[in-house]
Amino acid sequence: MRIAIDMSPIIYGTGVSKYRQNLVKNLLKIDTQNEYLLYGGSMRRLAELRLKIDEVVSGSTATSKTYPIPPRLADIIWNKLHILPIEKLIGQADLIHTSDWAEPPSSNIKITTIHDLVPIVLPKFTPKLVRETHRERLKWVQKESKKIIVPSNSTKIDLIKLGFDENRIAVVYEAPNISKASDQEVLEVKKKYSIREDYIIMIGTNLRKNIVTAVNAFHLAKYGKNLKLIIIGENNGLKLKDERGVRFLGFVPDNDLAPLLTGSSLLLFPSLYEGLGVPILEAYTCGVPVVTSDVSSMPEVSAGASILVDPYDVNSIADGIKEALSKPKTLIAKGLARVKDFSWAKTAEETLRVYKEVCE
Image (cartoon, rainbow, N blue to C red; front, side, top):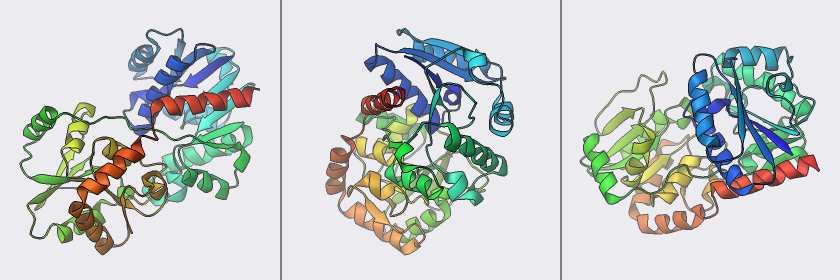
């Protein structure tokens, strides 16, 4: 069969970008029977999109197709007006795997991946345009997608609460995007960022990552310890600035993330909501203890390998930090055992199983 996959998100460097890239690379490794067409649209970054798709296609029999339609126009054409069948741009395919932004009409079988429901579950943390886009898209997904892939049972339950048919939802876990760094890499990155003390790390600065409460909890937990809190991520309107014991590194290149995580004393991840919580898995694979929330998908992905805390309670988070720092070896061992259940090869195998199921 001919499988067409929307690769539009891969130029943005987000978790969704890495999902598309790693999923497709592994599909092309394990599946030599089906034909793959990788397509996508952009305007200003069309050349970059073509280059990134070509990198994924390289060495395989897959083909590619790009078109000059920017995300905002794609939203209008496909989510709001729901015109222009995707076949008009990419030709015929037996199966269309759409992205997490635009849902084009198609005369062929469609499936999609919904990574999380932040715009619906936590609308106050999502810009109005993004909320509206996802609401419009979800209407067409509910009407037209034969199967919906989600990264956790938690997200599946969220979809069912919105009225989606349970039998059309397939849980396919995602996987870590980084691996443990060497001691030398850790030394080099600590020198690069002038990090001299032991440190706890946080990844992500979106409001739902619960930064303010986490910082307050850190100050409670660090009393008497020579310990810093390092926060990675762009400033998204929080007016973040360095303070005593806390450093905001801002955007960090992918190559620096693994050594920064590997060199930390623990990952603090008290998020209010996650579709899966991939940073938890990345901490496990780097041999780092994790303190995370007892809500949403985080208990599911942790499976007993993290310290779970109430993300709305500063004392609960502080106590969790102290507990994790008191027994790192136990948590590291549990995390390394847990992360063995996750790999991009497994994600690709289970996704391919969904493809075959919907086409039979």
